[in-house]
Image 1 (tube, one colour):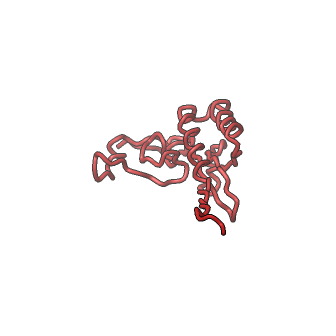
Image 2 (image 1 turned 45 degrees about the vertical axis):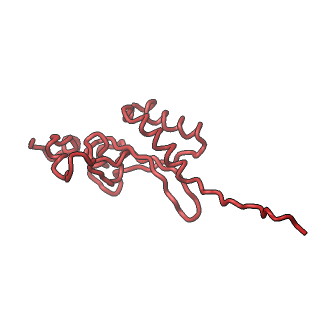
Image 3 (image 1 turned 180 degrees about the vertical axis):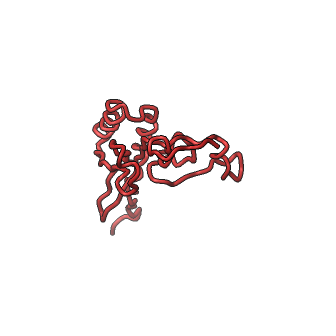
Length: 147
């Protein structure tokens, strides 16, 4: 393993691949992770919200009867990296497909923030949006004629 200094910027470097594979039970099954800021939920250096200095996640949030889509990013100030409570920022995204996808593109491409995850973020936005849809109840008419 590499020695890592105590400064916040250098502490968040990726670990060697052997460390990432230590927890695997089977080589065929991917090791899943559920940390905040992990876009795909995979235990990988690319998607990890704990290791990367730039975090990205898109998720659904339910408060009462309202459902919202939230984009989680890391704070731009370096001093917030050492404060776990204020390290992540949550931004609401519009549910309209055209406006929501444009908002994600503007945040990632326009702000030069994790452009490598743009297509995955758009795919996850669509998946989260479809998960909010309720199943329609089917009503059948009686086939008997009325007398």
